[in-house]
Image (cartoon, rainbow, N blue to C red; front, side):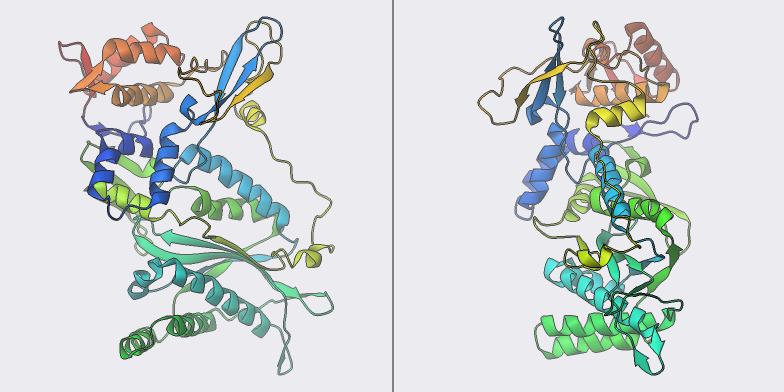
Length: 466
């Protein structure tokens, strides 16, 4: 079996993380191979992804008060590996951050570290130092940009820090993204804006703060002293900082949404996965130095290991709020710089579907009456049924596009494979439940066969090949 996307305008088949994990017995084999090093938080997130939008994860039951027709709505997983749940969570996080931002100019600042420090900073204990060192560096740099004569004015800035532990190639690359105010409050709660920030001086300041704080936490020995001295000598210009991106309050949502990908999404976008043949995964990324696209092919177990290694431990905060944006800084936000009168409204799943598809999922298709919630079934509860409820019917007014049909057909073939292929009858049956007409499905099969993507042996099984 081989699954691969093709550069076509009409059809693009996305290889999902779920397909890589749960096809070809990859996840079960991975647990056996890495049983001594796999973390409990990794197992928990993958198992939650497996149950996403299935009855095994629990569901709500709605019923039409007139005709009695029932509808089952399964719960989502809300784990760090699910792109669907991650997109919704990232949007909500961006709404929250945008609501919190003051109506003043901000900077998007990225604090990076060199290659020799990356392995050390895998440890959550030392990752906390990244937050502390970047916080102190930013506060001192803002203060130094607002001198009155020879004196520095201490300012209370606002700063939101997000730890990203991976690079575009999914390898370990810890660095901190920050949204920082361009200025701060003085002791009398007057807002002081800073117009100039010495970027070149930031680099040495960031290097000094980080290395000196790390030196205090590392074991006191000659090796530690030699290691720290080497990093000072090898990087005389300091560690790289990118702080040139300036934005106003109106652009805050887009910036928060950009950073929110690192908070809620898996370390790779599914659109960058090119192929998966059951043994190897191929994906592309854009090199930050050359700005060129590079293609990487790696063993599926190595891909899964990199994917799971970036899941943080439980209770480790990868987002920190500093100064004005901290809980203690709440009173500083009660000024003309904060839109305190605005109320942050969170949309329900029903409202999200209405907005996206112009379709109300809780209207009875027969009576056009709003269905009522009659039961909530949680996993592990006494009312949890032994038999799965009927699948959720597709929206009557939404027709799947060709791309969506192809994605669904490939996913069904992978899910229902038995031996060298999947039963045609099984795939047709499952596709009909999801709203694809049988005649349309056969036409799609023929289209894929003509393109050499589907092979149908005489045994009545169907395979997706390339």
